[in-house]
Each structure stands twice: as C-alpha cells, then as structure tokens.
Length: 72
Figure (tube, rainbow, N blue to C red):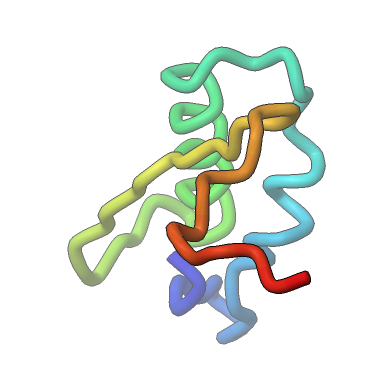
C-alpha cells in the first residue's frame, strides 16, 4: 500500500491515514476504510495486488517468562 501513487506520483500516506481512522472501528471496518482511502488516493487505478493485514497488540498482559534464572 505504501507504494500506491496518485496521478501526481505522490505516495499513499499510510501512517496519516491510519491515524485518521477512529480507534473504536471494528477490524473489518478499519480495513474497509483503509481500502477506500487508497482507492480515493489512486483514483481507483490499482496497478498491482494489494494485501492488508491488521494486527493489534494486547495491553496490560504480563510479560512472558524469559525462562532464565534470576541473578541476584
């Protein structure tokens, strides 16, 4: 997606676009909004395949054990 260009050869502004999507958006809605933003940017002219993966990081979960002994 970052290589998608508009008619003026400007690259798609992925970070700015992602930041503009509301945080309470569901994953399918998020991907759809991102896809539509890219379509608008390119004027609907996609010259290559596009793959999108959405990942989220869990907050507040304990860190996994390192498996090593504490040195003290």
